[in-house]
Length: 481
Image 1 (tube, rainbow, N blue to C red):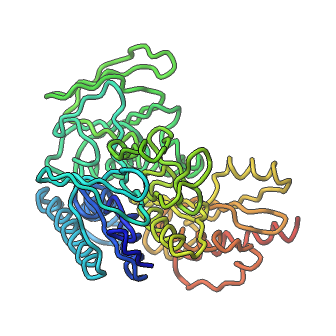
Image 2 (tube, one colour; image 1 turned 180 degrees about the vertical axis):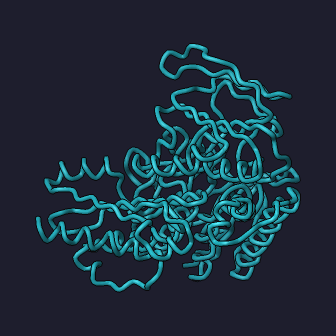
């Protein structure tokens, strides 16, 4: 594998989960590897995303649970008023970030990966430019190069941020203060998770969604049930079809709201803070992509299912890309899988990725998860392939474990082919939905039929029986079709 005319066999630009898994896997397979990172090791997930946000959700979730006097009283438990320390909750998240970041760095070092702290860019075929923090600029060579630079929060036009009163999730995870009234722009998974945190810690939330319904990216039936519990029952004023056309930081923060369709001004809000949770954009500026004739799509780097970067539909030799910068499923575990697959292909082992089998989860209380096709896309596929689409629902209120936990407000929707029973998708809202979805993801990855899955025995009493019930209902419809 080693070619003496190159400084490295592989250079990875970006040390998030995609870059980390690529570098580690390549080094373990005998390649000389360098990884370049200009910010913190671990990328968005470790430092500004999944890891710290889950720490905040865990802590605030405990507060919510202990403060729910009615729920506890149903167990016969009498709780004293809940007290918490904001700084210690923030410290919990920061300590977790530091621990995981250090572990990730040490793992790469033990694997023999050379870590270069610099801004990386392409400098033509098999050449990578480095701008180090001390100003030194140099070029290294590599047989193969993987772009894994991730993404950054998207800030719509008209919105000014100051990192204190108007901020993105990058700053929110620090939990520097708890505004009495905070507006959250966007009702996707980021907005929902932070609404969960803020309301648990006593903040009033106004949620502003530009699309025609709150939680627009979720299955409509799941969203309807979830919104009833995650939004309507909490101190949240949710508005849809409304555009935050202008936001000015300050005390108070001023928000100009407009009708999405007419763009006409409707009202002005004055709040203590604003969290901008309107999605993410690729971090591809500064990569000098033109030196390799890479044409991006809204900043995203085009790739095929083997992670090869494309130019006019054809692979560019020795150039690969993984993670959020590719614009596929912008999830940490997707990036990690892409990183490993890219290296496998570099090693000559033909591997591709099946995005349909990759699950997604929103870690609210309770959780939301999904995998595979949406019902809308499944209907389109059924029309194209000329088969009947099956859909069944399994309810948590019929599950012994959920009833024992007094957490029975949940739903699973399973989508499948009626002709052969193949599982096409699943959408879950309820207790531990993020864990339950993995079973269905595995079934989709293996192209399994509910006729086979129905024979699998599930532990009783567990939440996994929600999935079992769905499989049984689906199998009956396949047999009768």
